[in-house]
Image (cartoon, rainbow, N blue to C red; front, side):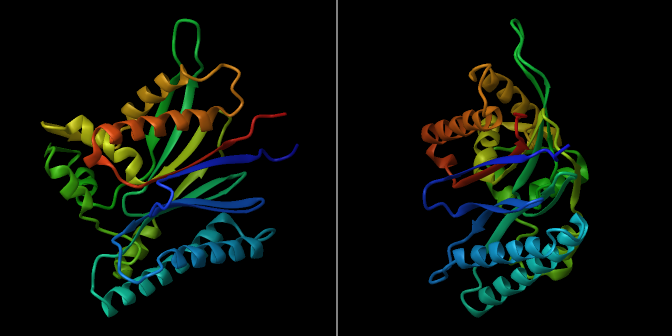
Length: 297
């Protein structure tokens, strides 16, 4: 029996977004990712970094097309990201020392599973449809955030479990990043990249979503607007909120829709765009990549 085929979809906004998607396919191995640029240094063609990263990953996958495990690919990718970290840091120090770099998350995927590497506050969510829609009940989803944000708020929540947060504190605490590509503290970056997440193979009722903070942060800010709230880890990572929104989105999709997971994600993106149109101060660039199994023919 042939291995199941992993399909994908991607979205970025606006057209010249500084958030971007990565997609390198060399069957049976693939690498997907999203990245969020920090800062806008004058005179730097920042997309060159992404071209170099894409070329390296493509060459790596070609060389390991028939040999090499996912763990070996991840180890090589980790070293290349550390090289990028040094290069970006040296550029910063040679110029205006401004904060510049990338938050990113990468998923190395094959038919056996996936490995996740990330820095900063790009997130990965595993979405599982626990039950399909029926005549009297919407679809039910389980949503799990697989990553931890490398920022002041995420790190504090990991230590304490809960935290009282004022809405005005949220942007400040989430922008205080503890790690990103270009921070130039190799022991920190290496240590975080060595804590990769191992995932089993996707099933037919699952989708893996990678996203930048432009997708999820507007919804978190809207929930906390104008109030002081005791914030838990689950609330911060919006797991229950995403599950509820996906159930509502499922009801808008025809039962015979072939591109089910892309359509479900489209509804989620539309809700984010609608929210940022009404609350322009929440607006940010955004990127989203989703992976799921193709429907059997």
